Length: 93
Image 1 (cartoon, one colour):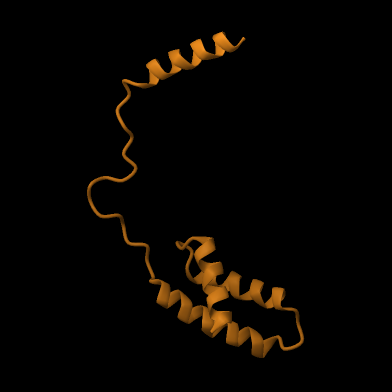
Image 2 (cartoon, helix red, strand yellow):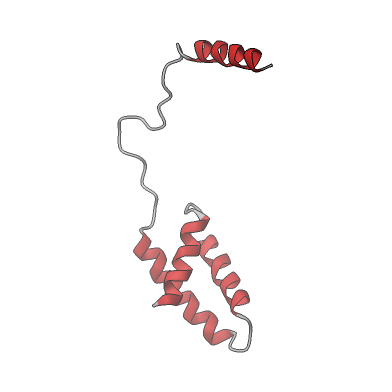
């Protein structure tokens, strides 16, 4: 069984070897990501202050969800984890 697996892996390697390398990005610069991290952080700070004022007696997770939903609406092209990090950074200030 082991010899058969080794033979198949060698055949697969020889079959894949002549393929050209795949370029993830062309030689030019990547496209801009849109708003900078500072802009997202500024909006996240403003929204966290808003959530603290409008929902004083509610849980923090509810407030975070409200801020996160508004950030997604304002910055749909940004990665979700960047928006989540902006919220955490706004709360750490």
